[in-house]
Image (cartoon, protein in one colour):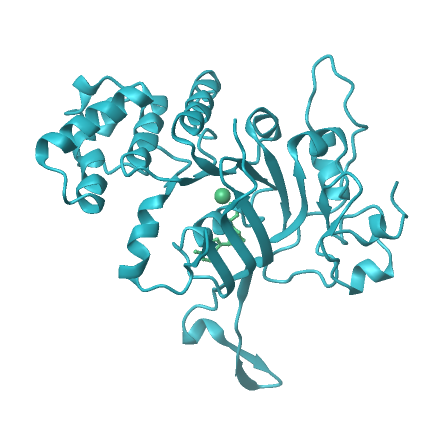
Length: 340
Ligand SMILES: Nc1ncnc2c1ncn2[C@@H]1O[C@H](COP(=O)(O)OP(=O)(O)O)[C@@H](O)[C@H]1O
Ligand SMILES: [Mg+2]
């Protein structure tokens, strides 16, 4: 695996909030008999900066609802960021028109969690694979497109003789192979894989993971790999970003994270992985529930569940700082030496 330090995709101070206030009638509330209007905002991503290097698999982990999918979609331009900037190589892409975004759309593809929902059930596999190719490579003639379909189907391990079949005729694992083929059809450089194996049978998961890693080697792809499964992360990642409530707690190389997790949240996550025959970390049980992203805690977003919280954590947002092992961590306790 060759990882260059050249940044392929970069996000700077990205914020993504969703307004879920609803219609006018939903928003009316009364106080002392007087009506007033409310707004409810889901603060899904709260100022994240991240560099994704060419050739790496950067995994994003965190509990359900912490904003992983929103991050992936915002990076690809499927959601416009509320604020912040997104760059592909040196081009800023978050403010482009549809037309100017087209070349980047081809280079940046997505593989979704649910291979049942992400393939159009009325289209044959051939049509599914040909559609993006014709759109992005109008210069190819019919024979060339057909050849490319056969070539890519071979690459992902689905017999090209089945190109005339519909998605429902395939198993879950084969469908995910077809989803990966659809992404590969347009020669992408960067793929956001959002929980690509979570919906599959355990016996199939390893095969699809191997295919994902094989494609990375063969085509020099760069991945943002979203998952809640830390055993998968250990298997495939170059670096890992740990997210909590739409913020980045820790960004570390895989080895650093698994040998020496520093943020209290990373430590708790890692201590929860069952490890057969290996001495893991002492299990850390977090108190409380994940707060709702409509009402973020003040200061450090993790302070309501952290065993090391003090007054500063309740008030001041911690900045990401480079630690002695090279990991980036946002934690007052670590900075003050309160946490060993
Ligand atoms: N389109 C949307 N509209 C409103 N809220 C959304 C939307 N997409 C995600 N959210 C909310 O944003 C938060 C983060 O969601 P998501 O990115 O799906 O988390 P994850 O992928 O980590 O489980 C959740 O509270 C979710 O309900
Ligand atoms: Mg998700």
